[in-house]
Length: 477
Image (cartoon, rainbow, N blue to C red; front, top):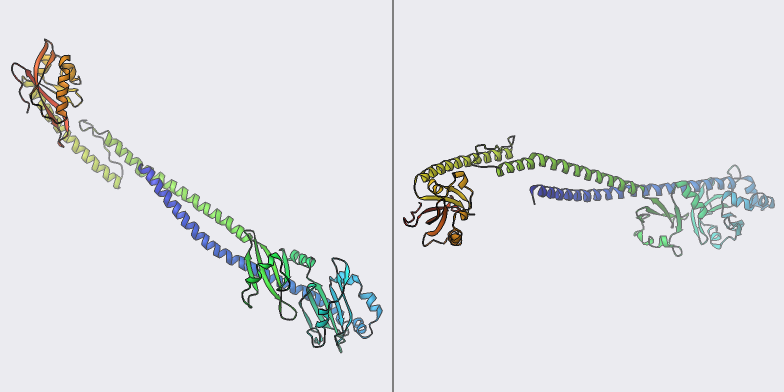
């Protein structure tokens, strides 16, 4: 794995780690903020529901006040005249005022007139006994002060009702009171649809702890863990949030559970914003990593490759010394100057060694022993004048020739084995005797071979000196 790949992988790992930590921190903060905002939205919606119900109760109470403080009603409570019944207590009244029950009770609790009407089924309903009991003397719907009213919710076996009750007085709001007028508007599906349309959200209501709650309420009833809990906010899914509120009835008891279903548009917008934010950060991170890698490529890696190429092309024997020093004054430039200094020293050593080698070869050209050098692969690198006179050719022609071509074919195998033992470090017990091919024909000579090593002790080439066998070989020291 090269430096570029290592740098890329480390940056990728660092970017992924940073992005992951940022994502977790952002998600934790967002979830906390989202819960607070959604809770605030749900609380405001429940407050608004309370205002809507209060406004509808006020509207019903206004209608009740118009009927209760009316001379015709006051007279009807005295004589129960039929004309009042025919002109005011027909079924159209229930439909127009959206009433479920209309009760006229005397001060002793007896009903002068009481009627119920089911607007959805378009049929009359009997007055249940539970309503009559609330109208008895001393009950909450009797002895209402003049000009005052009692209004609120009333849960009956027939359902939930909006109720307004007032004392029956004359048109000047004077008495004595001749009883109580009670108007009851059902909080049925039609009324809930009207409230939902007004609020813009689905609204439902159910008697609290009365009968068997429906499926959507059964799991939530236990959520109100104390008597002081009146509101509960529950996320249903990723798209819907349900807010529950407990409402007290006309008599001060918790009797109704209302629910508002809210779309989680805050969560949706937050998720979209968070996703866009994280994608922007990821894009910026990728762009930053790309720019950083480009800077590393041009400012570091390319300069290191140039330095490597200059060092690989360096030849200590060449008169031209490349300058590997990169421009600038940073660490890479300092390394380049250090390498340049080492290359100059190596070139000086190479020049000195070359001069020594040239002097040595001049000396070898003056002796009458045949001397030659060959590489470890068997190519002749130098042959002195005495050897060249025997085999012919110039110094340049002698260099590069395989040494085996200078040995008689019948002696090549013996010569190869001797050189092979020498390269393996085995001492030669006797000179290598063989015939060489000269201009005058085969000439038997005795070779004395030695390994030439560099400063590190590594074999570099083989030095051979040869004499005709009748004179005997002479060692090359």
